[in-house]
Structures are given as C-alpha cells and as structure tokens.
Amino acid sequence: MTDMHQVMWVAVGVMMGVFAIECVVSLFIRRDGHYTYWDTFVNLAIALGYMIASLAIGALITIMLMPFYELTPLRWSMNHWWHWLVMFVVNDFFFYWSHRASHKLGFMWASHAVHHNSDRLNLSTGMRNSWVGAAIDWVFFIPVILLGFHPIMLFALVPLASGWDYMCHTPYVGKLPVLDWIFNTPSNHRVHHERASGYTYKNLGGALIIWDRLFGTYEAQTKPMVYGVEPMPARPRNPFYLELYLWGGILRDAFLALRNRRVAQVTLTPE
Image 1 (tube, rainbow, N blue to C red):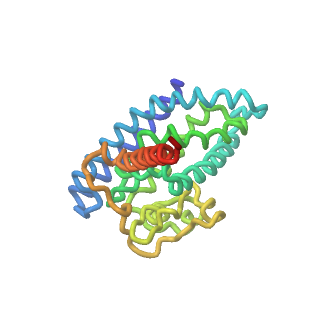
Image 2 (image 1 turned 180 degrees about the vertical axis):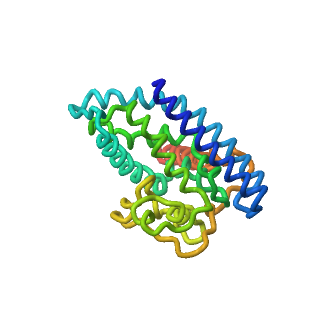
Image 3 (image 1 turned 45 degrees about the vertical axis):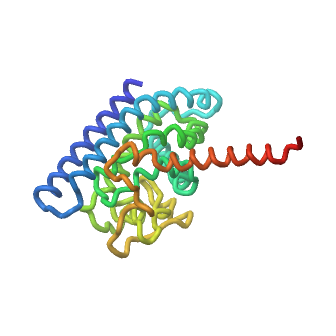
C-alpha cells in the first residue's frame, strides 16, 4: 500500500507542476482566457477534495477487490514489461466502458458531471473530478482483477494511466495526426468536452482512442469547441454545489416517487 501511495503522490506532484506552468502562462503571459481566477480556484478546491476522498476510497476499494483476486486462478507475475503493457491495455478497455456508463446512466452522470460543468478546458479542469464517483465505478476494476492482475499492481498503474488523460486537457496542443488516430489526445479530448453539439458522448477513451473507433463513439475535432454542460450549473463558484447538485435532484425524485407510491397504496387499500 505504501508503494501505491508513493506512486500516487509522485503523479500528483508532476500534475501540479505542469498545471502551475500552464496557469502562469495563460493568466500572466499570454492572457488568452484559457484560465480565469475563479474557475481555477474552484478546480483546485474540487481537486483537494478529490485527493482526500481518493486516499480513503482507494484503500477501501483495494480491500474490496482482494476477494476477487483470491477467487480467480489466473495470475500475472508482473516480472516482465509486457505484463504491465497488457494490464495497461486491459484497464484502459474497461475504463472506456466505465466512462461510457458515466455518460449514460443518470446516477453515474450525477457524479461525473462535475468534470464537465466548467466552461473552460485546461489542466486545472483535468483535476476537477468527483469525490464519490470511485465508490460507484470501482466495479469496472473487477474484470481486470479476475483476469489475474493484483489490485495493488493495478492501483500503482492507475495514476500513470490517469496522467495521460490529464495531459489531454491542455489547450496548447493542436492536432497530432498519427497520435490522434491511436491515442486520446488534446484534440480528441476537446471534442469530448464540447457542449453545443452534444459531443460529450464521443471520445470516451482514457489513454487509447481505438475503443471509440471500434465501438462507434469517435468524432474528430473539426471546429473550435464550446465547453460545459446543458444546462450549466446555477452556482459555478461553489465546489460543494458543483459536486452534489445533480444528486440532489435524483434523491428528490426518488423521495417523491416513494411518497406517491405510498399515497397510491393508501388510496387503493379498502377500508
């Protein structure tokens, strides 16, 4: 567990370093509008909450995955470089389906929407993640574990895989003709964050874009993008609201449905 945390903190340090450089360039040198003070502050507040939640939830998920590892007869020694490559590809495949579910299932979108409900796209947006999402989509790790990959090895890989996805949020890299065909790249990921054309269901891959090409969710960037969600959140400067406002709607609807059902049962019950 200690090694996993060390990998995570190294990844966090690198991410914060490149973010700081990009932020300074945008705000003070180029003044190009990719960053605003309030949006950046909110993104950092959300990122702090995400890191705190990840420490607790990540450890719990590792414990919950261990019985699945004990259940499967498959084992990868991870003593060869290509074992790590296979785990990387397998994990990215199931990340694609997790991400796809997060855009289709209401209760998963309620968590994932925070990553999309900013009208800016930059490296600070890449740190804008759900505090509770991991408690839901961890089930997509189960197939990876059942294929014989140890949970601790998997969670040592996840920060590195996430680092690639994170770098795809930079606005300063244009099209990369060869890489755009195989990998998730800044150009491909800009399409994923598009608001106006409903492209948010496109380009769902984490590090590899080949899954989108195989399963019909790929879209190339052909124009400048407008970012965000429809409708945009009412309180864009409140991190707690941004994280939880869709959950409030889901819980309210569930309560009303339960209440209406009880009223209907009482009405139909003969005296």
